Every structure is written in C-alpha cells, then in structure tokens.
Amino acid sequence: MNITVTLTDSTTKFIINNIYPLYLHDLSEIWGNLPNKFGVYEDNETQTLLEQNKVFDIWWEKPGVLYPYLIKEDEIPVGFALVATPPYTPPGCEFYLNEFFVLRPFRGKGIAEIAAKEVFKLHLGHWELQTNPTATNRRAQHFWRKTLKDYTGCNYQEECRKSFDDELKIIFNFHNGLS
Image (cartoon, rainbow, N blue to C red; front, side, top):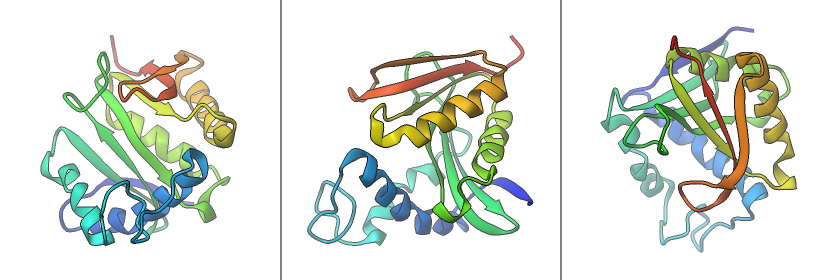
C-alpha cells in the first residue's frame, strides 16, 4: 500500500472536482441534505457539476493560503484534504482542515489515517477540524478521536459547541509545532 498526499494545481484540480460530488452525497446521509431540482447537492439553482466546480476554484487561486491535497493509493485517486490558513480559518488556529474525504471502497484499510497524518505533518502549528456531532456521524467521530489520539499522543482538545458557521459541531484542536 503506497499512500501519497500531493498538492494539486490548476492542471490536476479536475480530479478533486470529480470526487467532490461523491463527498456531498456521503454528507447527505449525515446532514440530511437533498439534491436540488437539477440533481446537484447545492441549496441554490446550480444546474450542473461544472457550475458547482467553479465555486471551488478559490482553492487553486490562493496558493500558500489554501491547500487542496489529493490522496492516492498506488496512483489511484482515493480522496482529498482541503487545508486552509488565515483568513480562511476559525479564530485562533493556523490550519483548518476544511474538508477531508476518502472514497468508500478505500475506507477501513488505514488509508485515511495515514493520509490525515501526512497532511498534518505538512503544516506545523495550531490546527482545528470539525465534524458533525450526531449519531449519524459516529464513524467519523471515532475516526478523528482515534487518529488524533495516535498522532498527538492524546494531546488534543475536543468540545461540542457551535462553530464559526453557527452549526453545532464537535471541534478538535491540537498543536503539532515546535513551540
């Protein structure tokens, strides 16, 4: 098993764009979202996946601030991690794991844990990540507790509260820097 985490650019962003609708479909099971009247998982009048993808162009327009990583196993795209830095972070953190996703056929094999730890190693400092606190999201909650416990040696904080977007979330914070 050869897991790689690589930064994408404008020539490879289409791979994340291909995977993103599958991520939104998976999230619909947790959040209860439905597709709009055009079959796109968006609240608005977005009619095509191409239109939806244009919203995410910001990830490739701000290098050094926004980091869109592609996760591969043996050269097969299996997921992505979107990392933000200020001003696109909640207050008090240097790095925010905005989105993290691994395709279903690759789950339960240790790939996501390896990839998450690799992403964390790429950016040293104060981190925050969030996940849905409901029973429909127990798998992700367990994953983040296990991964962060192992990565930080149990040196992370977890609390359930409203996040910066006013949604109730489980919020994880940790520091992996030198100070």
